[in-house]
Length: 141
Image 1: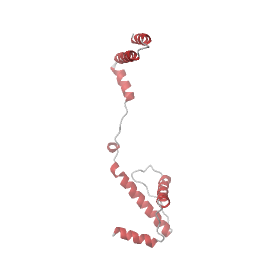
Image 2: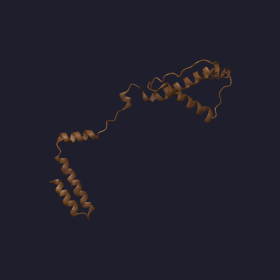
Image 3: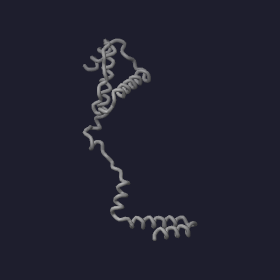
C-alpha cells in the first residue's frame, strides 16, 4: 500500500529532508493516480473559481460609470444650491446606473462631497443667487 511505504520511508530518512520530500511527492502522486476521473473532476470543480467579466455580464458600460456619477453629482449639487437660494424644496435624484443605492446613502454622499469642497478645500459659496446665475451664464455661453 502507498501509505505504508510513505510512513516507512519518512521514518527511515528523517535526517535527509530532500529524499523525504521526494517520497512524499511520490506518495501524493500515487494517491492522485488512484482517483478515478469522476473523483478528480469533483475535486477540480471545488477548486475552480469562476471569473465573471462585468462588462460582458451587464448592460452597463463601465467606462461611462464615472462620467454618469459626476454628472449626477453636479446636477444634485446645483439643484440643492438653487433650492437653498430660493427657499424651495428639493429631493436627491436617483442614480440611474445604481438603483440599489438608498436615498439616505445618496444624501450622505452629497453632504460629504459638499463638506469636502467647502470645508476641506476652502471653496466659497456664492453669497447671492445673482452671482450664481451670472457665473452659469458665463460658463454656458
